[in-house]
Length: 450
View 1 (cartoon, helix red, strand yellow):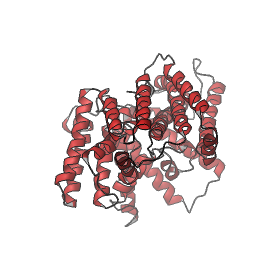
View 2 (cartoon, rainbow, N blue to C red; view 1 turned 90 degrees about the vertical axis):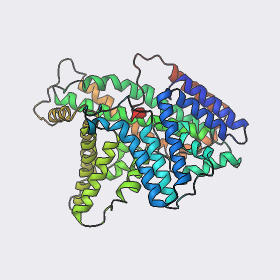
View 3 (cartoon, rainbow, N blue to C red; view 1 turned 120 degrees about the vertical axis):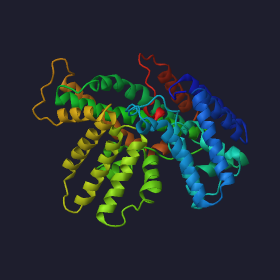
View 4 (cartoon, rainbow, N blue to C red; view 1 turned 180 degrees about the horizontal axis):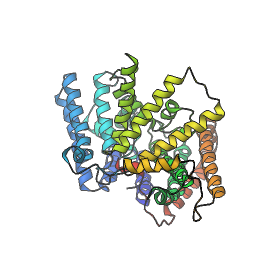
């Protein structure tokens, strides 16, 4: 059930009405989450329900901390391995790059969430779920189920428990939730889906000129950002409408000034998961320089591997690790002025996205070779006008910068002042218009099948 569909709008509306009418709406949200997942099909639903049930049995019957963590890792990482990496290990070649439609919907996200839950309980950072029903809703809450944000038990489970006790927050500032949903739909339907066919054409084969190569890479950088951050905006806005708070997942990453800053703004719930459950337990920055470097690059390579069993993802993650390591090593030796730092950083980000988007490592090398060929800047006769393309890219960056202002508290205060039926109706009407816009291409959210 895509977020940009009429079916999702109907489900969200029905869920909101039940949350408003019922004092304890937890079971209604469980039912809505099941309806949402049933749309994925019997295979996806069976895998999900089995995963939730087995994780609950681990909590019930395995009490010793080390054994419990071992069981949780074997189950959740084993499921991801079984569906994502079996061909890589047992033959059949690598899985398809970019997205893999054969994966159970959202398996990487809900398995990571379950594993983090067990670790947090063992670390006494959160009490365990009081009942299977509260654990099930924690795992299955439909706005964030298939592509995050990856919620943590300490921040989300208490909110779930309040839904069962009736001691929940009042629904306030509905316009904020509706505004986030509208923003997410605009990013997906108007921006990401408009860029998708252009990017597909430019990545169909290694381009003939550096101009086309850079154009394709920059446009993909914006396509994946608008697509994934659009999903996160809708998820956070929908949860807000239902009385729950999800963590921020994006904070204008293309305004960052370096790799560390980028990962504090891009897919925040995954980057903090990698930091807290992988990088720090492996030793973090402790020990000698070589060991710290190996942990950093290894953690980022595993983060890349999480996206799929393709060498391009692993090299993409390792490339980020090397970039972070390089900046960390040169931090006190080389200080570039801001006017040079941001363009250089963005150029590296865009080139790394080529690895992510390419179907194979060989394709990525050919593509990057064209990008870096200073003699290949001739603009083909049938290419988009450089002036028009430049204006479009500048416009995308301006929209990205404008989004930074939308995340400020002043925007929240403005929405609070205008909160009311008129603004609600305006947001709902515009959202419905975006959902009903005719489209010649069906572009599912990119992270739905990671």
